[in-house]
Image (cartoon, rainbow over all chains, first blue to last red; front, side, top):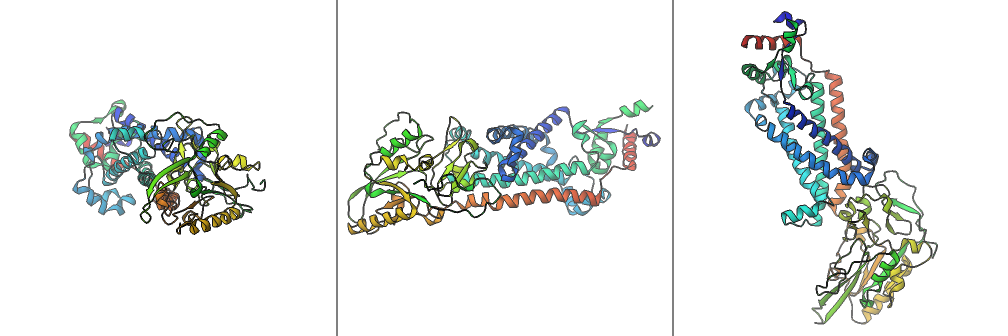
Length: 232
Length: 300
């Protein structure tokens, strides 16, 4: 085993199904489109970003529709990953040792399952933020607000709409911040991105960052040995 | 009248570059004397006529207001109120010509995210520039007087222009020209304030001791002013705001949230870059891979 290991042929472990990856990338693409179009209206110095979409008026009608796509797709991710993101005792131990997380000393961290506390934090905060952005976004949607008001039998006051504008902007800032953390973590922790591109990670990645999860997958026999077979 | 600097822009929406302190020159005011209004709606007709707009035929629901509210084509509206004066017991018919107040501190302009979609001229007029408007509706949220309306046809915001195109060629606003009782008058701020003072003295001498000028300081004054017989309670005139100001929610949204938001996003991104420079990548080691292989090998 170890000889083959040194030659670079290691096990790989399946992490995301094809449909989960497609779902994730729909969320990712729509999030980036929302980020760019939203920021173009957030600050005058970023208005030029509206040019990427064909001008301010296009951004204005397009942004809410992309928002609907994101809301629906995010709900899909939420349902898929809900169970694995429930908090457990290990998360608190992990958080208490956040110093070791940031310094890359994974050996001082407890063994974690499919998601660590940081990933769970991203999951739950984006759930709350996307939900808030959806509700406040409907309030700002000049063309769609009437439909939702009729649907709910509720007429928003002007002050509620002003709050919606303020909260939408503030929530978007937080969502972008969480998104930066999410993207950075995926880049910093090398070997992570293949989970969402190829659907699998190397066994060593699982051993280093999600050992409890790796043990479970190995127990289930969910490992890929195609490289090993090729080497033999 | 051609000295009103019709195209000197002193404020422009969603624009961060500052302009040199502008020469305001002569500022204009449209004065509406509610005590002289007879509710004929000539101003509404003149407004539609000049702006070449048509209102669809509406439905009578038993009130004089027609149409029922300001619309994307009806920039001005007579609002009728039957008010019982508790002191005299008299029924008073209060008629107020509603429309854009052309605030000196315009909430619509502050809220607007589209550069140059809303401008303020040196003469004080606040104008919507249709070509730059993106139809977001933020001006509606910024306005303390509930004036702008978004058109269902072209998704752009509309409101009274104070006939900036007529002023530019030395004409007075269409509504003022059509008004048969000189209830609506137009001129420089100084002229109009002096005229209002005269009217207020007259009204006071005839028993309206609370008569006064409506030029709310909360929005740094307006370029459309009212003479009210009951200036102590503007709200009885179909809900004219008592102390209008740009909502603090809007001020927060357009003020601190922009800077704080940009800072939070920028600092987070910077923290990522710095962390990566100091810490380097978190790489999976060969030992990790071997351990995983061993784990898998042991089980299969």
